Image (cartoon, rainbow, N blue to C red):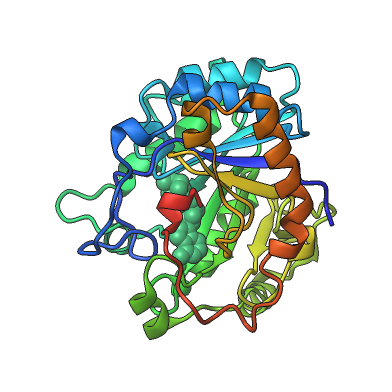
Length: 328
Ligand code: SAM
């Protein structure tokens, strides 16, 4: 087992997009009530008094859409200033990024992952469930702003859905050639949109790699990285190509993370709801911080058993919470 030192923190469960694979239009999404979200103070207390003391040093802010969280820049600044923080990153859809990239960078954020599922505005808008004036350009401007401000590495996340955007895999991979942009292809998971999933399924990373290999060749990247991606490079490219293959492969033995939802649930495994801790209720009812630390330590010990390694292919079953609620 890897050391578990990485916490994905969902700052908010709401999003300004309705991605088909995550929170499709028409589905009954129940949001946490405002009073049930961890306040900024509660979040920082949990990080400083519970997570850091038990060994977490790397944090990713996600959502929902983290840029919708009031006070997000202040939260970044506070986490970046903890002396124990070794890494702080964010996953965003970049819709609001152009106007915030500089402030976030100045607050101490250095790494950013941006979801970009298509280079074609009409396909992009269909994926994000948007009607009306296209949102693609504003997202693209957000990516350019992040690049100019100096976020490095800058990663672009692509969820590949057969028949929707898989015909663009070569165009998206080509973004890694000229600039030091790291494109990561994620196998679509049966969370959030069972209908789309059973209709279309997923494309294996190996199949994507073969398409890319046939076009340009593909070399193993030197870095495996700390995360779940297998990293490759188009020969001569400045950036890399990562493949996150949770459907075709099981990488639970490499899992180094837990997830904290916006309403304060600590979840030890993305695909298994066992063992979750309601830290918000505990904190608000005055459970001593030492006791919370012990509960999290106990959960860390249990995590290898909870990890979703016993799945068959992972293609069956749906999950109670969507990625936007868990903090994907
Ligand atoms: N709103 C931000 C964004 O769009 O990047 C952060 C939250 S989003 C839930 C985080 C990541 O989860 C995105 O890269 C998204 O593509 C991915 N994701 C959501 N649902 C997924 C699914 N069913 N399968 C695979 N990845 C998914």
